[in-house]
Image 1 (cartoon, rainbow, N blue to C red):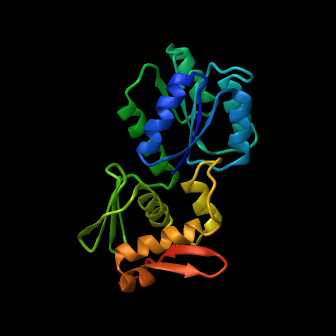
Image 2: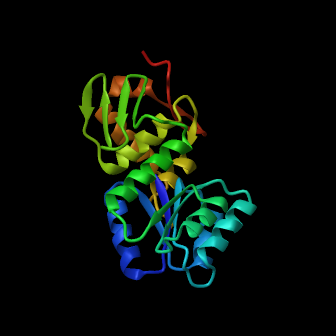
Length: 225
């Protein structure tokens, strides 16, 4: 899943980028509100993590502008402003969650996971479809009762396809969810990742389960026995 982190503290931003990437997220980061608003407007994210006290454009203005222009991306406010009035204002301007600094990184991850599930209208962190089972907290996957050993990127790809099971997901959409804005890769990087995932599922199973729609993208076939 792809996140946008808008945080002006170099130390905190660097620490969070490192930790979130280790947790399997693709992360874009901005150091001020102007850059953050531009990235949020030009790209699609699963969640935006937003500080309020930002240079250039403050966080509340970024949030207000996103909502006024129709952006529905979930926003988690991360702020040292801990008064009840601050939290109320942020939530009423369109934030989906509010976490006060200092905070536990594990709690941040748990809140992000909840927001991602909400994006796909999933309540249970364990998702089952077409013989696949994904634990979205542990980032582990099983097929027909046997665990599939996946790299973080392979897991992220499978997670997107499972959450949108029965829909065709274009290569562009997959790339945007899996890689950060400044990531440079070959044009066939998604196809290579799908090939690797299919190989781990087993060639006969994978061809039935992960369908290729030529010129469109890939999908999980929910009718697979």
